[in-house]
Image (cartoon, rainbow, N blue to C red; front, side, top):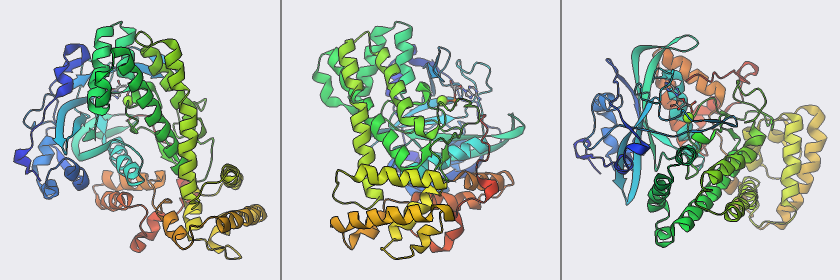
Length: 488
Ligand code: AMP
Ligand code: MG
C-alpha cells in the first residue's frame, strides 16, 4: 500500500492531444473543508486507507495541491440531450487529473466542481454541496448493490457561495472511474468529421478494455468496441431495473462507454414500485421514466452506432445493436431469478416475475421492503411481514401469487440456502431520496455524522445492521416524491 507521498499519476488521455480537450488549471477553494475520504476507494487505488485521516486531502480534493504527474485536462465531448444534439458540451466544471495504476488496472481521477473551462458555456464551473453529496453516496450505493458505477475518492466543502435556485455553498469531489470516455466523445469526433481522431479514441479505449481487439483491422476494432458497449449497457440497464434505480438524465453525454452508471443528477431509487416513476422534475414527457430506461439506453446506443457509421458498415452496426434486447432480457431474468431465490431457471419464471411486478405496481408496495420480506418468507400463513406491505384490497392477489410461488419453490432445489441467497440479492438499505435529503440537511447545518452512517450502510446494504433499523424504513408520506432540483 502506498503512502500519500508515493502516489503519482500518469495521463494517457491528455497524451492523445489537444483535439480531445484542453489543459486547464483548477480554481481551488480558498477555504476548503475536508468532509469525507473514502477508505474503500483508497484501497482500490492501492493507497493506504489510513491516509483517509490525512488533512492533505483537503488541498488535493479541491485542486489546491496537485499530486505528482497530474495534468488537469477538460475533456471535449458533445451529445444528445433529451433527444436533441448539442455540440457545445464538454467538461464544463470538471477536470481529468490523470490516472493511477493498481493491479494492472488504470483508475482515472476526475475533479468535479473545479472551476470554469472552455466548455463552461454560461455555467460557473462549480458544484454545490447538495449535489456533491448525492453523487458521493450514489456511487457507493450502486457499488454496494453490485451495480457498475463511478465512485468518489473524497468530498471537500467550502464557504464559497454558489448561486442556484438559492445561494448554496460550493463543494468538489474526485470521481474515480476506469474511464471517463462517454458516448458523447465519439459523437463529437464524428459530427466534426475528425475521423482519424475517432479511430484514435476507439483504439485508446480498446487498448484499455479490449486488448485482444488491437490485432484486428480498424473497422473490426470499432465493431468490437460497439459490441462491448452494447453488452455492458444491456447489463447495466438490467441491473438498474432489477434494483429499482432511475438515473433521471440518460443523455448520451451521461453514458459511459464501458457501461458504468455515470453522472448523477436528479436520480432516484424507487420507494413504491411505480414503473412510470419520473425522478427528474424537468422531464415533463417522462422520456427518462424508470420503465423507459432500457429503451432509452438502446436509443443512446443507436446514437453511438451512428457515430461509428463512417468506420463500420450499416449492416454490422444494426447487427451489433440487435444483441441488446436478448442480452438485456437474459441478464434481467438472471437478476430477478436471484431476487426470487430461484436456483434453477424455468420457462414460466418470466410470468411469475411479471405477475408479481404487476401486483406490486397495482398495490404501490415498497419495492425494496417487499423483496427483503420475501427473502425471509418461509411459506407461512398468513404471510405476516409480506401482507402488511400491501393495502387490504390486494391481499387476495398476493395470496394467489404466493400459492404459485410456493409451488415453484417446491420444484427448485435451493432448499435451506434459499433464504440466505435471497438476503444477498435483496438489499435492506437503499439510497432513498428522503434519506439523502436528511443527510444533506444535516450536512448543510454542519453535522456530517448522518453522512458517515448512511455511507457505511450503503457499503454493505445486504447486512442486517440491527442498530440502524430506522435507515431501512419506508419513507413517511412527506418523504415520497420529494422534488429533486436538476440544478447541481
Ligand atoms: P450535466 O447536466 O451535469 O450532465 O452537464 C451537462 C453539461 O453542462 C456538461 O457539459 C457540463 O460540463 C455542463 N455543466 C453543468 N453544470 C455546469 C456548471 N455549473 N458550470 C459549467 N458547466 C456546467
Ligand atoms: Mg453530464
